[in-house]
Image 1 (cartoon, rainbow, N blue to C red):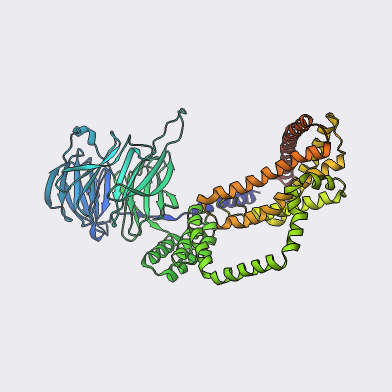
Image 2: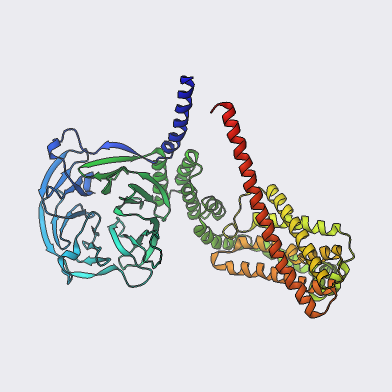
Length: 608
């Protein structure tokens, strides 16, 4: 009995823990420091870290007032006395140590003092208290300093002259408030993290943190995030343009790719304060006096190789790596997005659309649609011409027959709806069932073939058809019965059968034109969605006008009574649907209660 309980406990624990392990994309390698380093020389408070040339790690120990230089193997090479509050490394490997946000010491990669400058500003010194991630230097030598008290990023020339503000709160809703960090990648892109300005009456409204990628002129070309209720301890960028964000409140590290998509996140452990990225993709995180390394999983390495091949223009190799990543994790939407972008650069727009749809990347899907339809037009321009000639010939030689079909199916609903509905009243009731079955099929097809960025669905078409058939049958019965009842109240002439038939025939325009509109929506983008919406609303309005005419035709009363019947039918239909939904909710709760009782009894019988 004990062994059985132990086995159940072990298996339960295994199933609980395994998913978390399997989903991890970064793993703890161990301490960065080498065993050769004297333990008494280790930092007490690693408040700022950065990798330089040859993967040297520079650590600012504020408590001991020193900067330590470690080799790539974790061996201490040199210590530099400094009262700096933040350090950063420029693209050439020079160290910038900032004190009180204004006084900057510039040192070479080996720690030798080259120059010291004072940043010119009219703001008081105490306004410039800086921490990890609050200073960065670009390839021109311009210095970027975060000022959290005034919510801005100020820029200074290599000589310390004030140049301007990159981000300043109060300019508008597009700017950031409570700026947290700044960093610059090897291509000159500037990343600024901060809170979105929001006015809310709720005291516990979540705080949204975003990272904006800008050029030297301050124009935003990408936004990363948002990250909810985060406190940014540092942001770094690797050679592939991947952005890593350390949230010291939740102790998570978020990884975004160069397209702004969230790749993954992993738990870094309690007490994380600063972050740096090594050239081989290893992440160094500071915990007070400890520096730990995290190495990427096999999946992350393959994704990075795919991105690297994509940047190099080797699309075949990139696709190979993306497919290998899919074999490891077929449910990761980011992989499909990366594969879609690779196909996009290869101008294989059809494959790109398929992958963007799997990634649920609606923005890139919409942008690809424009190029895809242009490709379809030019690739098959001769076919379009032949098709146009065929249509013209059909109209010439079969025009009369087509006009006859149009008149009997559609046209009469347009120019003689009263006569058409009068004839409908005498038809057999099974015509109504035929229309309902056709409506369920058309609606299922609409939901399957409508552009996914407008109305996505992944349901099976058979299940969707049966569900729609039941729903439309119920709506038909309720609407026809309510229409008949309203007519009886006002002494209308329509029988129940006539009310049922004429009501269902009012949806014929939707039945005929909704599916072509759904097919055409696949060639539309977000910006053109208004045409799709207008077409759908026009069909619904057409059906509504037909129903209003139907009231006059079927009940044969005065205009005032017809309007009353129309309004009462609409109100009654709303109440009837509300009652049906209420009963459906009660039925669902009752079934859930019975199911829970059954499961509880079963678990007790088997002894769990």
